Image (spheres, rainbow, N blue to C red):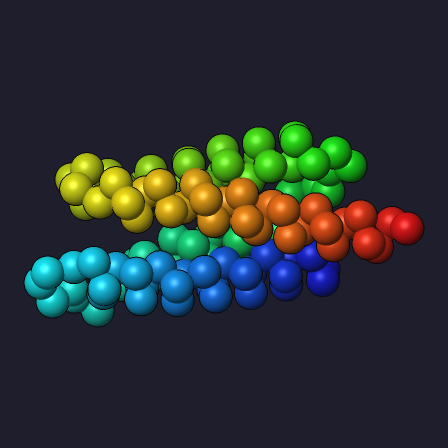
Length: 111
């Protein structure tokens, strides 16, 4: 249960980072619903990785994180009409980050 909580919190925090990044790089005002969807997308990455079974090796954990980040972010990327590659790519990176932190948590709790 704690693993799930960590994944969700990381997704939520990285979602805030994503919103800030989107606001800084956008030349036009972004709608609140767009920013909320961006945040929610990152939350879903954290949720998906948090409910996944722990992996004992780093490489498969990171691979899974990247693939989940890719899959979830691609759904949002489609809604931007393929116009926000930076946001899409960030989702993959955030998948790696969340997977790495969860891997460290898993290693710590199994010692």
